[in-house]
Image 1 (cartoon, rainbow, N blue to C red):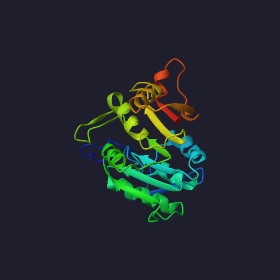
Image 2 (image 1 turned 135 degrees about the vertical axis):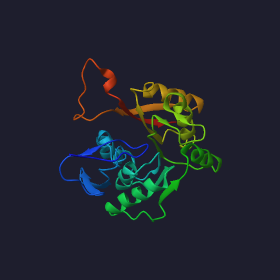
Image 3 (image 1 turned 90 degrees about the horizontal axis):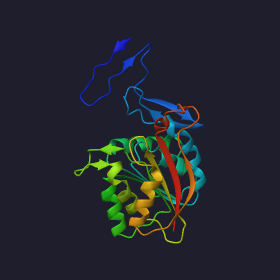
Image 4 (image 1 turned 180 degrees about the horizontal axis):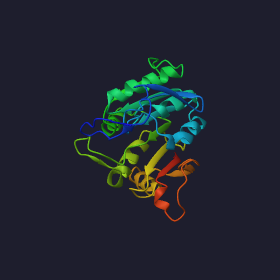
Length: 239
């Protein structure tokens, strides 16, 4: 066992046995992803979202997809592999967007194609800019952190999620053809459907719930501790 040096802001971790390489390509349902196993919490792929990545392609064929808080682009890759006509990935960190582009290449998808965009920007600022230019997307993915101090005004899912949902809904076409894919850590926040209901009321849009989901079967939780089932994902058709 060899203790790792801890840098400010990093998660303390230990390596037991042979240390893994700095970068490793793993497969999830046959889809390759680059992971950094020595990156603390920043490994690049979170297994609790595995089934949602696999199922996303059912909703993306022929659609213009916007993936916000894109991180290493695993949901963007799923959308592209699912036949999306366009995929735009937005994250404040240009470093993780380069990582996302490499994940595209691992799937045999050329990220430099015009139909794929990787935008380093604050998500809320980007959504407002897209609204100003009257941009439209058929499917918007919202997978934000529970809390972030990266923005000048900070971010809190508990307080700010409805406004984010309202902004995203304004980029969806009218007529019920647009879809919001929304996730939430419900252990630390209100139930996801409450966020969605409030956000769509702010944007004066109607919606139908298409599908909901949570943790995969290999994340069992005690019956008497429902708070442990922290992940909630919802697909909503927005009119």
